[in-house]
Image (cartoon, rainbow, N blue to C red):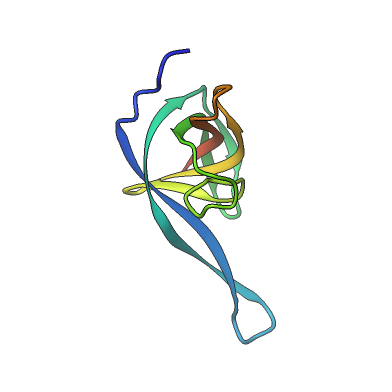
Length: 112
């Protein structure tokens, strides 16, 4: 298996839920750090959003592996940010037997 071409600097973010004082919660995304990555897009499609249609493009994002439990190891439910682009992480798996890289399966969502 060839080594991935880690040529894009992405910010790994996690969501934090805080009480809003009215019995609900507000969600805030906080940066955990930056990772060099390879982003491989798939075929896109449309899906309904909360108030508008969104275009969703599945993607595979490969990053260097980090030990389990490390804040720099992506997990499902987090996201990557590249400027205004957002990549939601749905699942993470080791890319190779040696465990040097992780593949994050997710989707890029674009509001229309």
